[in-house]
Length: 261
Length: 256
Image (cartoon, rainbow over all chains, first blue to last red; front, side, top):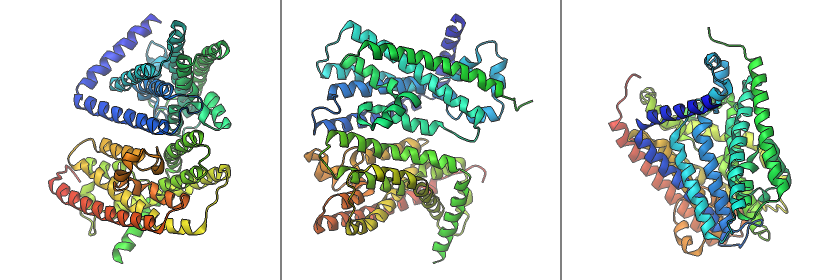
């Protein structure tokens, strides 16, 4: 475990060094992220110039939700997507071999082996947005609420990581499909609370593409509080997802028949 | 006439090439459809009494699928890789090839999007489409498709000057999202913005045909909209011509 933490730090340092060669990209990426965030906020303001609440959410609550979405999206874009997006060619070209030969967990290497630190700008802007949303409305911040929020952020990250792993594992069974773009399309739905969608879509976004965990649930815990059942349920869901991802990865490896020599 | 038949050949070639990328095209459609559908969900939750919103967003979805432009992926990529050199040698205007690509991708979007549109249509409460507004919207749709192609094509040509043509095009699509009636239907925008939005090009690339179908528009509003659409079509046509001329002059390419 400690070995993996140290390795993770090294991975981050190396990726950062590599990225520092392209500093102009940082400015550009930061600008694009800011534009994206601003457009999301403007869209929200336009909605709330017409109504007081949207499906039970106030403007402040929605800003917290959007910030949470940006934070988790940034973290996933920094650490997970650089490894697992467009994963299918790695399987068919036999690039997994390299991962299997190394003396650390193959799941760790394959899902967290490289990163794109500039995406963390999105996470920082997201946290700032959350803070702005909290100060904007008088959300009564309690210690338990804050703790629940942090824990649920962790749940969101774990579920986000695990669902990406599951998606990547699908490449071992169906090498023709490239599901990550359609997954990203679903991920976009996390910008708004689940309660605005049709009930079938809500269920889909909780159990199949677990978008509920990346924005709605943490924001709800911070803004309006959350019952113990839902909270414990979320924690349990993250454990289930992580276990599923591990099992799926092991199964996928059993199907893997290298392609290189 | 000769140009038209060349264009037709390009459309056919690109259409057949996309046949091999069917599953990829499917994911593109899903990505395109998601923002209007979110808009539909948000606004019908916010203002359930506005009965014309579902219809508006349904038509907007159609407009979106029929006006998609990916010149930042296709054309800018060719500028960067140097493949453009090959196209410069062909004895016809270079724009025909990206235009053919564009049209064939749009046809694919419509083919794949059709089942989705049918599903959305089933869920629409009281979708009362009348014949004549739909007919009045068809030319607007064609013009919107034209403006959006020229707009994206112009932005994609910034690849001659910068390595970040992708981001430039992305910025353009963010503006269409915000001011083109996707995030917020134009009629629901804050009043101070309206005079600007009605003159800026973004409404005419996206919302205008949907407004014709969903809102009861007067003849004057319709005429005004069409005039502005034509003006923007000409402006972007001129801009893309200028950009092409000065861009290709400074273009130096290795290989070919």
